[in-house]
Length: 412
Image (cartoon, rainbow, N blue to C red; front, side, top):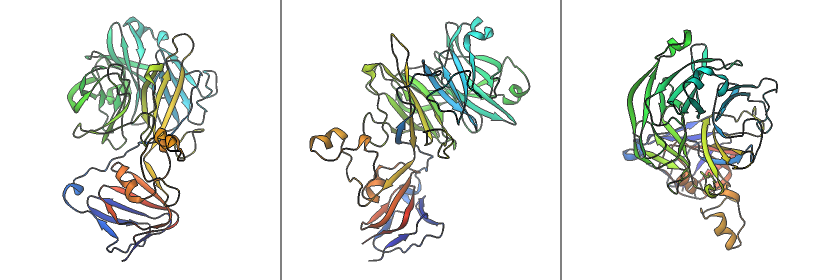
């Protein structure tokens, strides 16, 4: 039989039923390699997916922004983190484990210091979003309170100056997200949500003034199944194809992250609790609460101790003392190691009971490329450690294969 060889650093991308060789990889196709073409594979969507759990950082942390954190967004160089009654701007190079409003480059604005909002009886910020229009960046923040719901707009600079707000015709407004075209989305309630509200935003008017009316309702995004309860945060992927939702299930058994296709409303994946690749470990019985989330590629090393693209907030709701916050990080990569990898998805507990080596959250390489692909989402990158993989490989979804550390030989 012939084999497929992929050189170090090269990639083979399978998309829409076709194969494309990148960066000069050598490919010899024979009986050892089976590529699925046409049909349902060709119709599959390739996503910008982030689901491999990396770590928590900060973890179990108490600092300036960690009391009732609600979520975050970002511009090119700064985090914008909301608490129940505060909005922070923190440089990406600043260690999130230790933050004070007096630190260089850090800004904080308090809800109680904004009389136009307190007069309207708003008392709660939600999970924010960022959008850049022309040369001006904006932070949009959901508002809740005894007077109803709304969206506030702040300038994304060191001043965090308040621009304006507009009421929302919703029962709740825990989060908002903005797609690449500038449309704003928000869930109309916490519980039993079957659709996401969509609004046209007049960014041009916001850029030059403080309009009273700048939101216009559009047709909503219908979801394939109800988000049962406790919807806390939302974020749209930079390519506009996926909606990530975080939730805290006090009425149901599910707490974590669910991901929906923006074009169809179909649920394409959800996190697990305590094991597996897309791990979101949470103990609701210990008053741990999932909060907002943001997507930001931080693999460039600028953020201390943080990498990955998806970042999700959780906190321990201490009923007596200060809250402790966690920030969970995820990327869209799966590693393969033909020698040290695992070939099953048994939980940590199961592996412990049979006295096999344990791997926290199973965040370890897979043994075969085929097993890695079966657990990958559409659009994932599979990093293959140099060596030989004597397997018949069928690429049945859009993924990118990349050789790491030398040449990879696939086939028998």
